[in-house]
Image 1 (cartoon, rainbow, N blue to C red):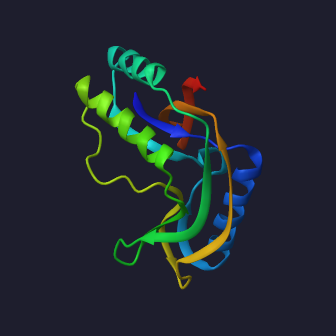
Image 2: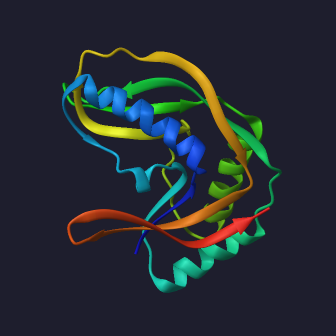
Amino acid sequence: MRLFIAVNFNDNTKNKLLTLRDELRSNSTRGNFTLPENIHLTLVFLGECDVKQTESIKSVINMTSFKPFDLIIERLGRFKRGSDDIWWAGVKEDTILLDLQQSLTTELCAKGFQPDNRKYNPHITLGREIVTEVSPKKVEPFGETVTKIELMKSERVNGKLTYTAIFVKNI
């Protein structure tokens, strides 16, 4: 199973993210835009995991404690990939969010996992392979209070990329 740990959004936040995505789409000549049901904030990407590893990940998530925190989306940005960029909604840096991500990563490493070791840059992918004249910009801040994290399975179902929550940790 291909797995990652994420924050999924309530309908209000998701709708605002989809509005940003749709504005970007309407101003783009090309792109592969994120499906509404796949909008999320990745905390830790784990990749292919077997059943035993999945149980170990669930244990780490279950032992992880964190306080509710406000996740604020405040900008539209991109990662340059030649002429085909990845566009995202940027999250305001928050100590609780960064500590949560670091705690999960540290505990997973202690269990033998090798999560991505790049500096964590919290963002919500809106699309890939996008060609547009739009420039990164600040947006009217919005967001929600995070009270749960989820272990997500990524798979292709009938050719469609599908993310499914297989474990939820509520505060």
